[in-house]
Length: 153
Image 1 (spheres, helix red, strand yellow):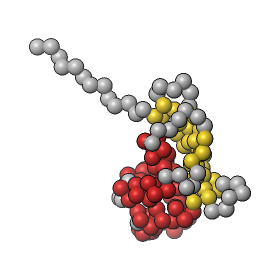
Image 2 (image 1 turned 120 degrees about the vertical axis):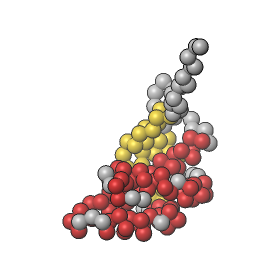
Image 3 (image 1 turned 180 degrees about the vertical axis):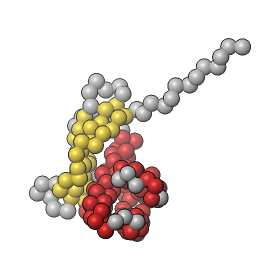
């Protein structure tokens, strides 16, 4: 009997790496931006995509995902001296993951091979609808990046 062929593992079509952020958008109060390097397998080179979110979008996403209550519970398990650093980092990671989710929505809609910017208004409703569906993954990723995976979600 011939051995059965092994299926190749699914290779992601895009490789996405956070370049920097979140940073305030210059001359645009209330906006935050994360910049990502995006490389599609079929492209010769990658592009940089700046993804903006409004602070009110972030606040709404935190509310609909229960982030504040979740963060309070996680921080309560840490030593007092550690809480401030973890809280600040968790808030930045939340914005980064929210921007990454918005970038995923843009990719699903057909991202072109050009560096650019996704403004705060782009995919606004889609992001608000997607945030609760991705809550568990988002919070698990934040715990992993904080090296607190053992603290639960």
